[in-house]
Length: 161
Ligand SMILES: [Zn+2]
Image 1 (tube, protein in one colour):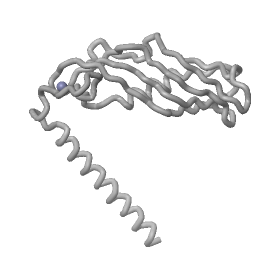
Image 2 (tube, helix red, strand yellow):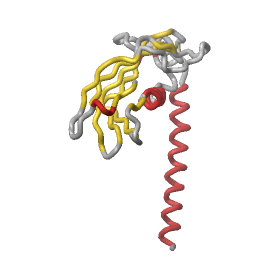
Image 3 (cartoon, helix red, strand yellow):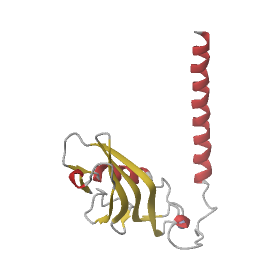
Image 4 (cartoon, protein in one colour):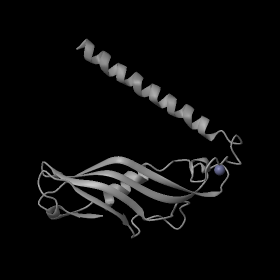
């Protein structure tokens, strides 16, 4: 996804709509995640203080395997009203591919669940059999408690000073 900054006039934004057909994901043959369709985007591009600001909607459809029932299912990662800000640094064209790939990969579910796929009202046949989500939920809570305790310690130190 390459944007020609020369096509964007000052104080105006350019509406860009399209899809990335080439394989940008660098997924491994062994990954349970596969690309279903090209990444689609509808964004506005503008120049803000020597930076290229691209803001809009990105949709990337994937096929993955449910972590519970192991069925494959199709789902989309949707980044809505998502912003990317990249320094222009005198370059006439800016390649956004790496930025958008990273943001979409970060938005992927850690434990894909077929109930969140495209199939309406799907009930995962294995739901309730495993309590992985609960277990992970507990770990997360412990971690966040630790973080907040640490924050208080920092605050206390500041108060003593
Ligand atoms: Zn499932």
